[in-house]
Length: 393
Image (tube, rainbow, N blue to C red):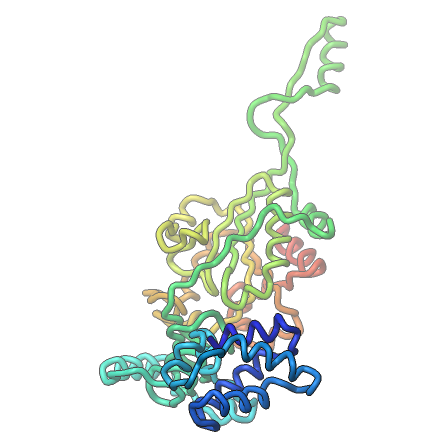
């Protein structure tokens, strides 16, 4: 009913906004008017009409929508409010000063221990508090609130990028390898890494050798063939996907598309935030079709160039703590797996889409940069050029 009223006012060219509509709902919930149509009419007109030039349109729409209604009950009001609007009203937004006053629990062990206690003690739903698993509060556990270090449960997407673990099944989209680049500069930069060689079956005419052999053969044609010349460099892309990387999808897709067109020997895998015991090739099947990282190391030799692409922006626990992964319980810390990968491949770099001048602002970027042997470069043309030089040494 109320949604229909709002939409019909908009159709009638009454300039009413969603904020004003929610103000009307809040006024009804606060009991500003009694449950009569007349009282509701004056409250609605006061909340929604900003110019007397629109009063006639408002009256016509009001009469059409609420014709024949004698009274409004609180139950009818709540049923008429879309559920997603109520959820948005429940989100907690704090000022920077209020955020600084909220303290973290004090480390990974304390956070996990307290969560176990809350799960055992809590019996119902909570909203707006600082202790229980709930919504719109400052508790370390729940959704749509704020805490400097917590576990996100039941929230759609990031809000503050503060969660150290997420207890939800999240779906990510594959990077597009057919993106038409707005510039050829990335391809030109990647070509500096190419090393051409002739391998395989002889399938291409070697014209100079054919002429030379025919001349030596007293004019009798002697055809010489050679294997096709192609780029012999082998590249293995490890790409971070989802979460904070959503801000960098365009740059990553351009790099992925350019790499697919420039390297014949190119393989890729996805990971989230930090490499662990398994990766995947298709984000639609990342929960059911994972590839163990040890199998990747056995399959691809040390001659592959390993290129990590990610913003390295995460909780430090995801790097240094067993069980620290934001999405699952990992038996070994992320730094253990990153060390294994970089020890296996003779040449490896990390390309970071975050502006290089901001790296010092994030602790996890510094950790990853040290683990990768200071071979982290920005995902810019200059960064690509520096990274390719590091891979070519």
